[in-house]
Image 1: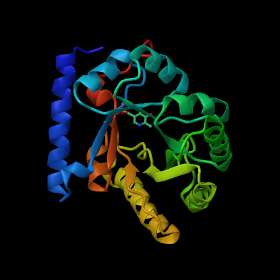
Image 2: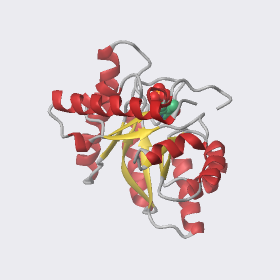
Image 3: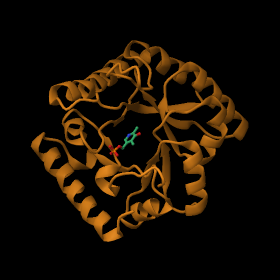
Image 4: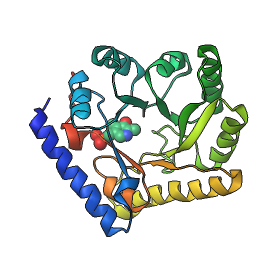
Length: 235
Ligand SMILES: *Cc1c(COP(=O)(O)O)cnc(C)c1O
């Protein structure tokens, strides 16, 4: 784990880069939030994020986040799930995370609704994860199925659909990666029109491609290694 001062230096570089990119593409920098991804790092990474004034962290495993959240305590940090969610972990997940970004199938929506009801929660914030790149190794609903899933979420009334999330195509080619992000933005526009709702959040962009994601309309970039260094499995 790197030292806090190194983390702060990396954060300053990335923040400046985000600003520069926003300026270059004519966007207001306040539209783009930076979410530190603390997976595979201990609770110290969450403390770094908090100390730097970042209000939310992304985690991709329920079990790992549960331990970290217990170690870190409750104060002043939002936790969001950015990895796949199994139905048998929904109850635990709803107790840990303030938002789930990876809703991608009706069975999961149903399981979440049951727990929201059982736990007596209000409308629980979610994003739909879309597999725009059609990568068989990735989770996420197919683009063609996204509208049906969104309709199902709205009909249930127990989850609050705040937007869409995707992972960029695994490619070095700017055009290929950007077309994933453009695809998510265009899908958002279609869904907003078809369903008559606002979907303000577009969660897209990671360490290697957040600049391209911002150029294509990202409102939330999820950055791990560029902030914290290489993850080692021992975490
Ligand atoms: C790990 C992860 C990230 C961060 O990836 P980096 O390349 O380390 O920035 C972002 N989003 C998701 C869904 C992830 O699993």
